[in-house]
Length: 84
Image 1 (cartoon, rainbow, N blue to C red):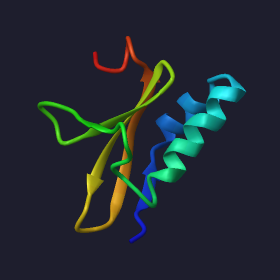
Image 2 (image 1 turned 30 degrees about the vertical axis):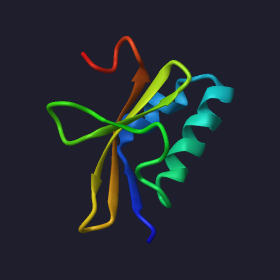
Image 3 (image 1 turned 180 degrees about the horizontal axis):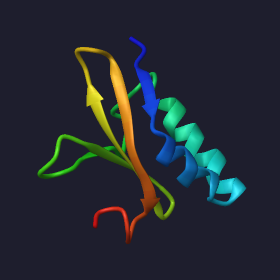
């Protein structure tokens, strides 16, 4: 099963502002969500229907819609800012 990954414009802009080395790691993690939306290390967030994965000090927050086979990347940001 292959999931479609949807990324908003605001998330794309955020990723573009990051250093190049970090950007490639973020894109690799997002691309991997197509094949496995719940990779090792993904944690279900409490209080909302979303998951997070770590990439260094950054976090990728995303939602999984299993019936439609869609992963929606909601936010990418530094760990100290992302949960506020």
